[in-house]
Length: 176
Image (cartoon, rainbow, N blue to C red; front, side):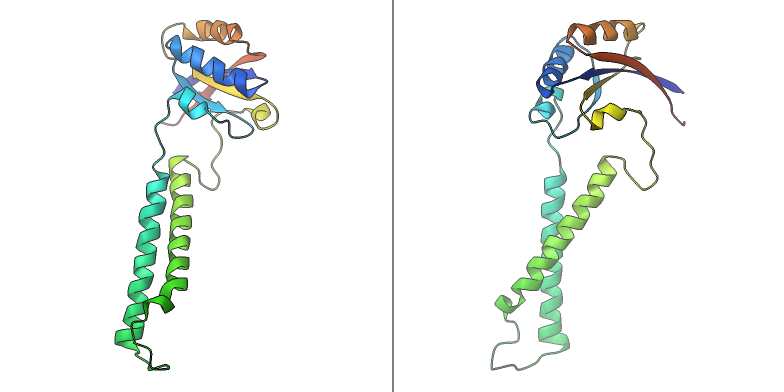
């Protein structure tokens, strides 16, 4: 199956945001936007839902911290109790540094793995679209040319009307 995409390149982030808003107002579905750096306001312009990665970090960070606290309590109270300086076996303040570090490590690792999963990235993954200028100095707005019959020509006209400095088409063969 072959999919066709129309790519419009813009020179400024403000022009790309304006174009995305205008194209969405006209009823076009934006496939993706590629930028050389994070553009504030682009997620609102594309009407993207809020990311769940914050919840992934919180839940796994708390799980890692509670797991480390349980391990520390088990080792110091049940498995290997030691009387050091008359302190109680379950001295929670003494466990704070490893518990904190385990929470941070757990949150960080799981967020990176979840980000790779959400972005469909893994080692050896090849890009669907070849957009070399989008990492240098251009902002690429990509629309699916198969949205409706004969949409490609209308999308090209709409991108040019929004001030795209360069417009092109790409075909991508997808595996079934």
